[in-house]
Amino acid sequence: MVLQCKTHKEKTEGIVTETEASQAVETKKASTAQTNVNVLEKQFEIASLDRNRQIRIYVPPGYNTSDKKYPVLYMHDAQNLFDKLTAYSGEWGVDESLNQLAKTSGLELIVVGIDNGAEKRMNELSPWKNSEFGEAEGEAYMKFIVNQIKPYIDNNYRTLADKDNTAIMGSSMGGLISHYAIYEYPEVFSKAGIFSPSYWYSEDVFTFTQNNPIPEEARLFLLVGKKEGQGMAENTEKMFTQILSSNHPKENIHIIIDPEGEHNEAFWKGHFTSAIEWLFTNE
Image 1 (cartoon, rainbow, N blue to C red):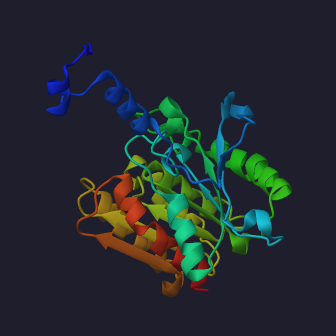
Image 2: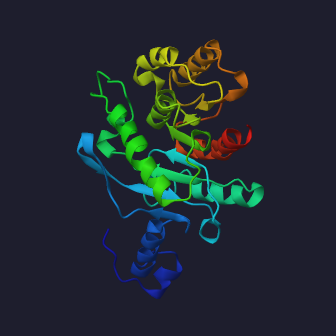
């Protein structure tokens, strides 16, 4: 659009001036990340995949004025977690939600967000290949988190590094890889937030789950919406039933099937705080 010089009358009748348009663009581009979110300057190499990855870190409000150690939550699709500026279609508001939770209940944790691989996202977030989307890179991606990212975080931040204080969470394909993570690495993760999991991506997830029972103390929070698309709620219910049939304690698996839930960040944001509270406080 070409902006032209406007008369005083045009301006007062609501015509957008060049200055006003510029201010609107700046407002739209303003970051919404809170001051306790940092983007690490260091780029981490996923050596086996020959690509680099950006990491974003949330620390509790009192982190810099205490010597306390904190639990850690690892999350995928970090571009969508903290900042509308980098989010694809809205953000989770993880930083605002946790700042509020710290204020109201004293529950505090560190969040480590791993950026997704853009066009490689589908491959990176599944350990099983798909005839339409191609090769599986989820095994390499999770080894990257467990063997490179977690040691770096534990060495550079005040963390409670044991499995009882380490969780993983994601949505959609991020839900699928979070499911895989707690089953493949039960010695690393004891809690998983599995939001809108893409169980449709591969039937292998059901066989894998059946053959690799997790410890009884492992806690799983499953979330799905009825309006997410064909098979989403049904597959999540199927997985829930399968996990219960493996004798996993019912008190350590929680499922929400939201009749109005849609496949988007607003839906996941709406259930984030309750998932954190259930995973970290209902011991």
